Length: 179
Image 1 (tube, rainbow, N blue to C red):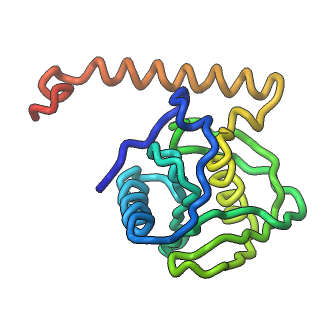
Image 2 (cartoon, rainbow, N blue to C red):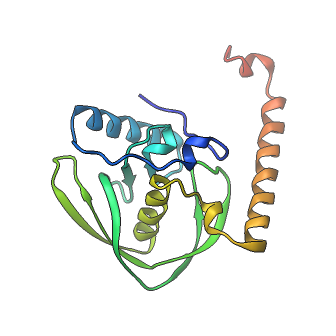
């Protein structure tokens, strides 16, 4: 099943996700649905459960056609710095230059209920930090300060307005799902 990805302004994105006590059939189904949603998004590399309205600490990702999932992830070590344009499925169309640690060591639980540790760098490290932020109710905008935050918010409003204009130009039959 594919879910609608929640976008900026939805209060679920500001809530802290619950710790998962048992990797059971419900969590496995959730992971399957999250992968379906990620694929359907067309351009994402990762998804946290709160982005589909599920307040559980679950993350899925697919970098280099290697789909994986982790439950209750946490960064236990980080090092270095890496400046990179970061995007978010919950803030569609916006990319913001952000400084984050270049490498991380993440600990969590796999779908067999086993504790795992993953060493990640650059894009994968950024992905973990970004998705763990989602589990803690933190969005990209929350990581920005001053003028950078103001400019990002202004650009996102512009993107939303353009999307609304484009949607209103579609033929009525299409908007109603008739064609």
